[in-house]
Length: 141
Image 1 (cartoon, helix red, strand yellow):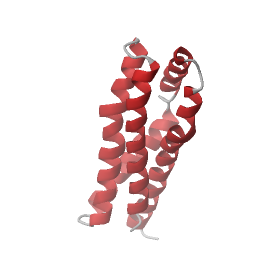
Image 2 (tube, rainbow, N blue to C red):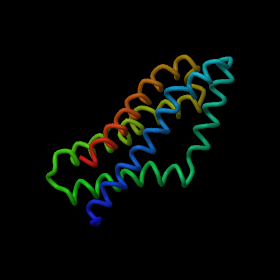
Image 3 (cartoon, helix red, strand yellow):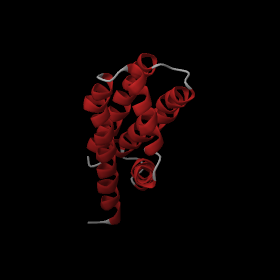
Image 4 (cartoon, helix red, strand yellow):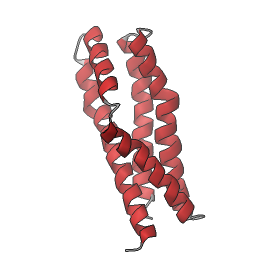
């Protein structure tokens, strides 16, 4: 296997890992939190939002972004690789920064109740899960 091929495998695997994390939130973590009283769900999500800020998650999340960018450069102008990189960088990292993180910050400050947080955060999470999955599929094409 060449280094260029290994880069695609690593970018695909990282994208799949991150897609799985967000898929888990979309399919059962949020549903479990919804079974709690709203103030308890908000408290649990605030705790999750603090604990997710750790080196392992950052390595998977941002490391995959670095792999995606490197793959786009190495495989320029391959449309599948470029599409995969855009999916991951814009649809996963970009959506997280522009959509999910501001909602997390508002929840942490007490500026949102659980229902006001849950719906938009869940929608953005679906988008980033789908984008990471699309990247995982496109990188090896």
